[in-house]
Amino acid sequence: MIPKKFLKSGEGAVASYNWTDIAEGTGLVQFYGGASGLEGDRIYIMHQDPFYTTEKNGGSSKSEATTSLLVDKTFSLEPFNSPRVLIGTAWVTFARTIGWQNNSGVVWEFWDVIDIINVTTDEVLTTFTSEKFVTTGTGTGAQSKTEMRIHRFSISTSSLKKGEALGVRIRVYGKINTGTWNKNAYISYDPLNRDDGSFTPSTNEDIESVLRIKIPFKIDL
Image 1 (cartoon, rainbow, N blue to C red):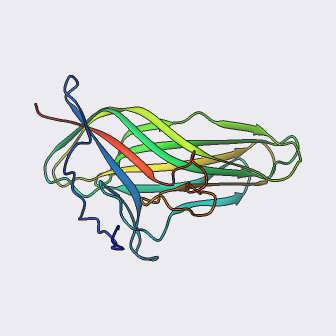
Image 2: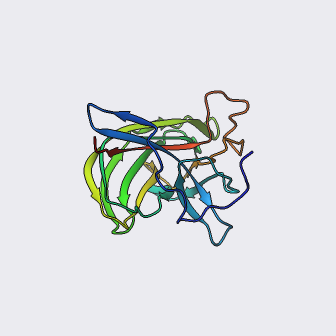
């Protein structure tokens, strides 16, 4: 049973690699992303082991013209105790639900943006932008779409010094071509893969409510 203990940012060191590629000289580490701490004192972290959290997903609903930032979460690792080099292919996988009012003739667009960042210096190391989901309203009532988002992308070779921390920022944008109709987006980040809201892995085998982040590190052979 996973203990109901809130982790601190100073816990959860990179202890081992989940996969290694000897030819490439890289090791891939899988992290679980999630919220830690009570409301008002909450942080968003990455940890190699599943952990308990009371906040299972996040996002927003907005009615405004043009482009809206609907999800904006940064999940951070503790500062490294030795220099680290990122190189290779990263994976970021999470469940996302989007919704729109479906007014006739209005065009809605939704897309994800993922930044690999040096949290300590605020430097963006790599940015990945997904393809857009585009739909035209038919006037048949509000619509929604829940699905897994599986993003695979190359990380620019980047060095982090001892004492610097790595983070992954996930954003979801929504856009309409006219008016101020409602649009919403939420992502799930429950390390224990529980049901909550639109995310129901217990009854939908195509959905996993876990946020998985796989980061490639250079290893010394």
